[in-house]
Length: 159
Image (tube, rainbow, N blue to C red; front, side, top):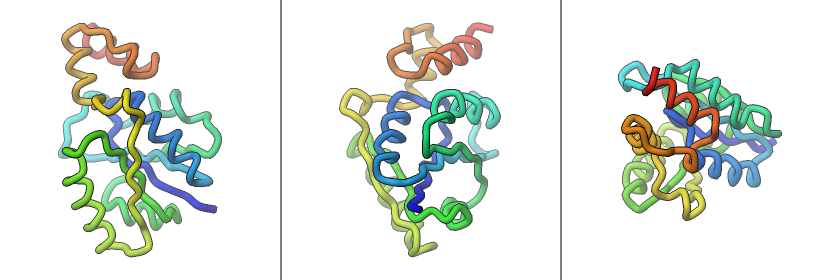
């Protein structure tokens, strides 16, 4: 079975993330959407909320599994018997950081490859950070995130 890890903070999950997951599903028997737990990074949504939102959006899709991880991504990939890490690239500006991470991961574990996938053109401008800012300012985010995420963002910013 070919298995890939799609890691991220998913704070929150966007339509761009969902597009990359769909693309990865066509290439692998199983895609593990892995939510990174990082105490040093302040997230809007708790780890459990992010896991729940992912479960609601992609948890019932065949060959997609939701998980959380701490520590080194390549160690998690090896534990999961994954042979690839999926990374989404929106723009050239993403590439430099992602390229450095891919090379370091290869140095740490040669058995795990990094595969870069580009989302549909209509999602290249999306980022969780921008979505949160639009939501915080009361803008319409319904075209950028799944309905459950839009609802959760409204609750966060308009309690």
